Length: 198
Image (tube, rainbow, N blue to C red; front, side, top):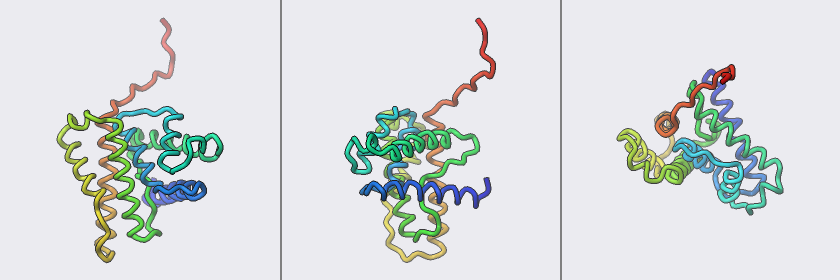
């Protein structure tokens, strides 16, 4: 996938989530919910569809029955779960945090990034709990960095340098999420193509 394809795919994904949130008058940020999901998966959890849909409703500020009443929301979020897990597992490292593209103002992109990182940290804490304290030093340092990133405020006037910095931080966060996933998810054994007879 070229860089353009990747940024196009990212833009489309973000718009689809954002439209779903707008349609359901959600009060939270789509990047944050995606971050929570990624944090939980990266820390080794696998969530049943019912539990995931309950998390969706809670995060979006919707009644628990919302996903029963809206096939569109249920199907979108069930598909989002499996796609996110596949991307985290992908050997080509094509995973991307759910963030708006460069057409959005830098302030909006920074807000989305800090929302995603906050969600990721929350999801990790929910899933890994005490295990985070026993993680290798580089993972603990990464978590400290993510905490700092989640608290970044947009005080400065944006310029070319802030664009470059934001791109670098997004890439650091992306690779960090993959590092956490690799740490807490042992590689799956390849399934044999032919069944063995006993």
